[in-house]
Image (cartoon, rainbow, N blue to C red):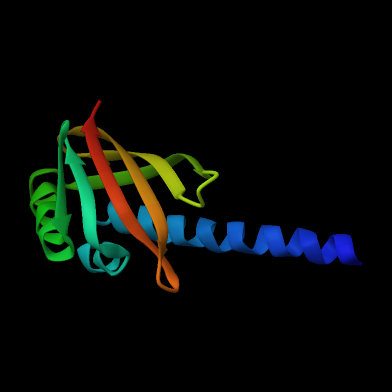
Length: 125
């Protein structure tokens, strides 16, 4: 019984993050900026085409809106996800748009009670 409870304690959080990643992936596939914005931390390391900057939530939201206006999404495919030793949850995906395929890497870390997007990388393939 104890082993079962320990197993559930490890599986349940992973399942919750899978649901979060599914929600974020669906938001990228449909250019749902408001859903993505709800998952952003107050500041985000935003990398687009090799240019990295640390920006606020509203600036990140505006940059994503601009990106989606130029690159209308068709689909999003999650390639890999996991958790680092430092409890950072990450997802790597491929975003198919009208102008090409982009590799996206999303890092979520604990901020208060929730896990929020701390870093977002979008790179053309």
